[in-house]
Every structure is written in C-alpha cells, then in structure tokens.
Image (cartoon, rainbow, N blue to C red):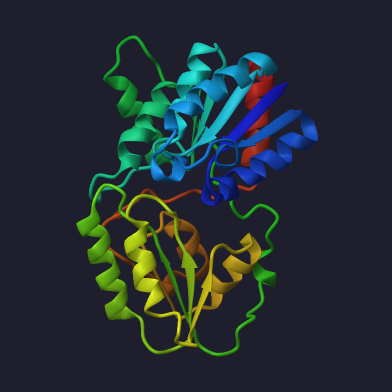
Length: 296
C-alpha cells in the first residue's frame, strides 16, 4: 500500500501524526507539508497552485490513497487533485459539527467529505452529520466509519508532570477568518478574563484577521507574567492543560481539554459552540490501516 498524508499547519499535523507514525511502520508512506511547498497560502494567496502541485505529485507517485484531515481552506484543492488524478481520498475528522457562527470550516469540511472515498469520524454525532450530508445527494453514498481520535497516542496521561509550580492560566486564540468583528469580540472577551498572573499564551493559526490578535499580544509582551509560545510539543502542551487554573480559548480542541482538565475550560466566543465531542481511541490508525488493506 502506498499512501500520502497532506497537511498545511501544525494543528493538522498534530492530529495526523499518530496515523503517519503507524503507517510508516506498515506501508509505503509519504507526507507533504503544503506550507513548505507553496508560499503564502496562510494568507489565502497561491491556493490555486496547490491543485497543480498535488495533481502532478499524485500522477508521478501513483499513491493508492491520499489522506487529509479536517477543514482547512487548502484541503479542497488537494481533494480535487485526488479526484481528477483518480486517487482515493480519505477524509479524517469528517462530520465535525459546530453550532456557532459560520466559518470557512463549515463550508469546506462537507466539500471534502463529498469528494472522499472514506470518511473517518471521531464521534457518532460526526458520522450522523456525514450521513445527513450524503442523504441529499441521491447518486452518492457515504463510506463512513467511527474510529475515534488518536490524539493521545504515545502519551501516558497519568505521568504528565506539573512543570510550573505556581498557579497559571493558558490562552489560545484563533482568528475568526470570516469576521473581523467577531475576532475583535473574542479579543475583548480574553482581555476581560486574563489577570495580572502567570499566563502562558500559545499563538494561534495565522489566518486572516490574525493581525488583530497579534496587535493585542504586543500590548502584553512587556509584562513578565505573560509567556509566549508559537507552538509546543504535544506532551508539554497536555501537561500545561492538565495543571492550569483556566484555559481561555476558542480552539476546536475542547474535547481534549475537557478530558485532561474539565474545570479549566473557558470557551471564548461562538467559534466552536456545541462542537461534537470526540471519542478517543489510540488504535484508530490501526483500524484505518485494516480497513484500507481489505478494500484495496
């Protein structure tokens, strides 16, 4: 089996990594980081180049499967390249559902699912959304499976240590890419909640309107109580979540946060209102491999 995993940012990569690591042990596996291949796609530039790059790569390498995750704006171009190069697409984290304001995600995720051969879901609720999507298209049928989210693969949660002895809060804020006003509202909410105490700020996705968040952070950087990180290794991140007092965030990773430290979660805005809860399963990569081995 020859498979290619494609992603464009660190959040996607973190969720795909358990799959990539497992498949590398049992099959011919490649991975492509689009941000390293095509410039400025995080600013909505050169997105069309993704199609050409992927189409040529897929034809040249003759993969059995192309695997993508979620709902990033880059992914539909990958999906169309897979369709036209006659490669089977696997959509991981299909059917995730949010009741909040519309975002790019809510348009893109169903598009990718429709173009995919298999939809791998992290919850029964997500799978039901996939089934509802396909119900409106008489000539297409879903191939959906609930394998669960393997995000805790390789992590012994009980052994996570508290590395910061004093009390502290966490902040992770992503821009509302379709709304400058909503991004501003989320910033105001965080301003009201953070206190002059030890606070670790993890910088979010650098999508449209991130400049507003960046300007806000500049006002905090002279205060020694605020520590900034562009990203964190998964184990260190989970450790910080487990022992923090409050986590102010509009991140989609609410299921992981609740699992580690339910009391800390303070959701900001409506970006991820009533998001479907993930079922966690470290064996999800193995289940996917077994499925694809049978279906070839």
